[in-house]
Length: 172
Image 1 (cartoon, rainbow, N blue to C red):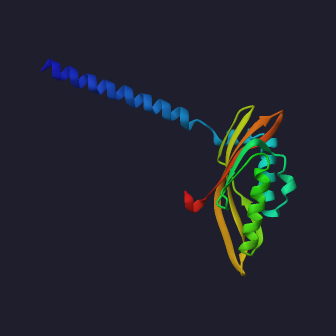
Image 2 (spheres, rainbow, N blue to C red):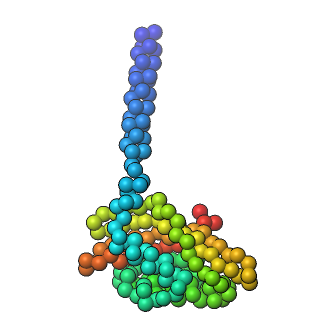
Image 3 (cartoon, one colour):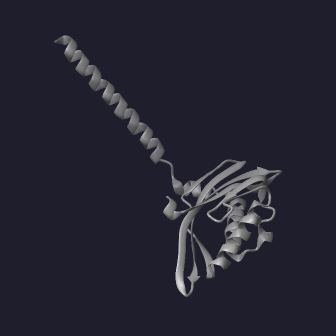
């Protein structure tokens, strides 16, 4: 009988310690203030991301010709689906322009939404940028929501894009 009581007390004590540890870990995670993290986005990083997003609907390839690393990777739903190297951004913008022309999309624009996911050190940044592309096809409204994930790195003292990937909302 004493062994059973000791076993029950031991199990109860173990569960109490486990639950306390979980609450402590959860409290640490929930104390992360997203707003403070977002304020830490370096202006240079935001400028590059904005440049890419503007180029994706203005088709100004000269704006993205020198903002990718030599081993950059860009992926998107446009064929051939991925581009590599320093000119990956230029090739990607060209493919977006080609798709817009093929589908005869008019008034093509991008609306950038609030960035909620972001991490950055002094040499690398990761962010997910939700966007919505809009326009018209044959007079009918067109829109596609999704998100770009970006990884940027400092290369020779300059922020450059290491990777960029598009995921449409219907793919999530």
